[in-house]
Length: 273
Image (cartoon, helix red, strand yellow):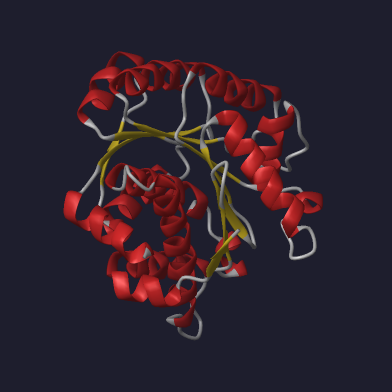
């Protein structure tokens, strides 16, 4: 059950090194604390190897790239691989610019990732080497729907097999796949797209879940995706008249903090193919 993955995170308090973007760094830290993990943020090349060494996993997010942070991603990634730590890549905006696309592809070529989490446009960019991502949002032509679900599931499994990483493709319908199976997840609210950082938060949480559940990482990442979507549902239900996206952001965080195994097991909406 997915709730077991949650309980393992609460029991072990996994320490996650985050090289993440400046827009959402505070929210990522707070989301990790809310889910039961512990965050460290560092993107200084002379610091990251030591920081990675004391953590259980590394979350790399390319949302606000610069030369220093790019260098740090490769240094920290190499150290994490050397120590056999969990490593996650969030290729924010891959396809929107040459720098983002080339950096993400180079990272995949040089670092072994356990998880790659992005929207469908970003993942397609990594699979094809080019793309048409609109900012950090998925291209409308690429949205996963009930009508194109089967080929998208096949794509996710194929991407996972080729990269050796769990593919976590998030959108209106979420897909979490390894080479053999795919979790199709239907939790969440469309209003979550009005808040900056829910995807970045999920990447931090998914890293913590993979660290705490090394024997069933695919299920753990699926649990993290269900958790985030369910928190969006619960947070929206708790909204009061006159409240907007700023309050909604906090209500999602509170829902993550208060989530327990029973609530996750009952509220998770998924199937496996």
